[in-house]
Image (tube, rainbow, N blue to C red; front, side, top):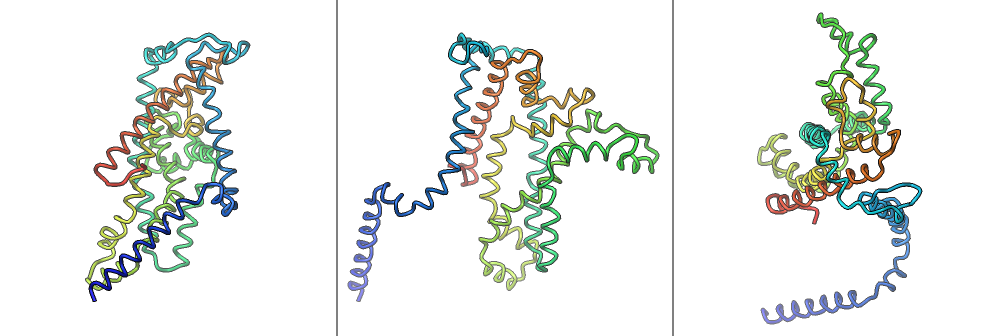
Length: 327
């Protein structure tokens, strides 16, 4: 009996190997002809990626040249690492690095857990109408443009007519120019961003929670586990791999913040903390009366290289300690 079972198992294993070998033997051309619809759907995103992500890398050459429009990219003389040294040795270097890193780390620490908490809470709601209403309310701010969000901040914090100052007046506090206060800039930026993006970011975690088998919750209920314990021991471990991947990507963007929003919130009163690398590159590369294309490109390339290094380091640590990584 045992011999017969082993023989059948060996036959099935051999058949599986033959099937896998046959699949591997099928050429790429034949697979493309059989599944041309899938490849056709993939063609447009790849075309977009090639045109808008890879082709512009050609222009990075000007970071190593004394670029001028008349001579063009290849006609301009080589400058080597001149502009990188200039940026590192400039008085703006440490101020820009500090402002950018501080703002991104503050945003990461304050807002990264919020979508996770929101997704766990939404997942526990059993009444469909309340769940849908809650999701709609939390998702809606994501579809408001950055310009409108900053406009709302300006209106709400206006020293004369803003609701915020009206409320402060009830407690005997005089009008405050919050948008012009350097100490309030980061708080306004981070928490308005949390309000705008928290609900939409929770979608990813809600999708991960759908993979949790209902039997686990049923068994935990039978064992007397409370809702909070089920969230901690069942739901949270299910979304940890997704959270780790998103955290790695956020760490890789540590020198990149919301350029549009920061630029719109800047003014002469808060510029000492609101000037970040992205806005500085825009000002010297495009908004200046004498654009410095090579210098701006060098700064942008410097930021990208540092971001790549941080991404690799974060991925290495995550793979070693969290057993989850991008690659």
